[in-house]
Image (tube, rainbow, N blue to C red; front, side, top):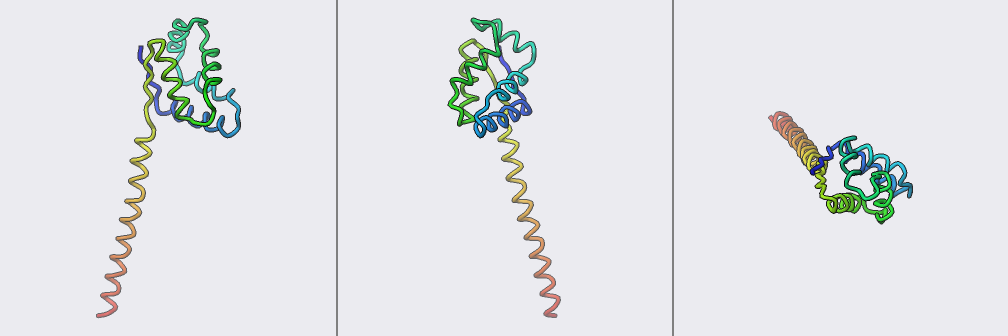
Length: 128
């Protein structure tokens, strides 16, 4: 079975995990992870669990997590579900964020160059 968590779900888990790192509280994080999965996905995961309880699975997962590295949480989730034959794919927000970051400075630089060109033209006109 393959599960794809969309960008929104990944972003929510990341934000919640970061809050858990800062505050030490994993209750909201556990609920946010649970909400990232559809009801059908949760049912399939529970069928594959020995105890049949996804909430308890998440509790154990968060107990195993060091609580200080968000990426480690995603790796644990991937590894634990992988052991049950569930391949989890995470849509990465980083690619979109990197493209946006690259665009912003370039646009800013272009604007600066444009302003410099205008200044040079005005200086040339002033000299004449």
